Image 1 (spheres, rainbow, N blue to C red):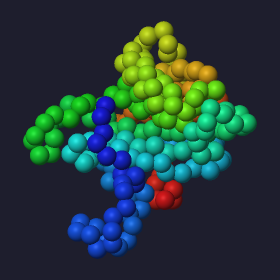
Image 2: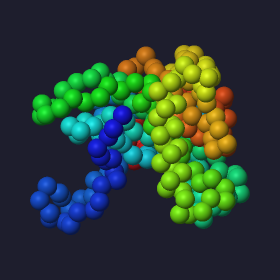
Image 3: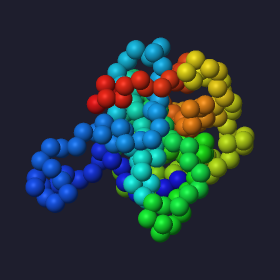
Image 4: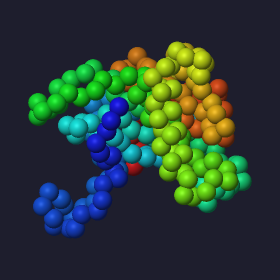
Length: 221
């Protein structure tokens, strides 16, 4: 699944520039534009939560977004692995959409699926991963290779690299595709509310998480 923009991550504009206002856009505004409900960890999680970013399709409609829980993950620098105490989980919500024409009629937008959620979660985990003792100059090549691998894995959710894990979604036991590696874990599944869920984390057990609809996304912004 390809996205063309990430609301909340846009470069700053000069005040007074056409098409802008002097008030900086809030990160939560991108989340409020979504036509679907957002998910996070359920009330059993008592730690900090924060908005990360949303992704839009070629016609500008919001397709997915990520919400963090626990410690804010950061890429390990210069090949170091830190103290190993980082604990976080990120929930990715993907609106379920079929193949459709773009708003301007110029092309076709890809369908979203559980595989979309699995790929976004896999790439998200890679984005905050730095293999131990890897030289700075080699990480880009490693990241490109692992991103391709994440897509191959996401396209084969019934394959041997995935297990099935049952987790609560709005209090209902729901099957998820689950895999783990030395870098963390990845989950992907669907809900009855018309969205797909992906999740990734490190330092927190995937077996103990649950998901629920966020009642008021503005409380995060």
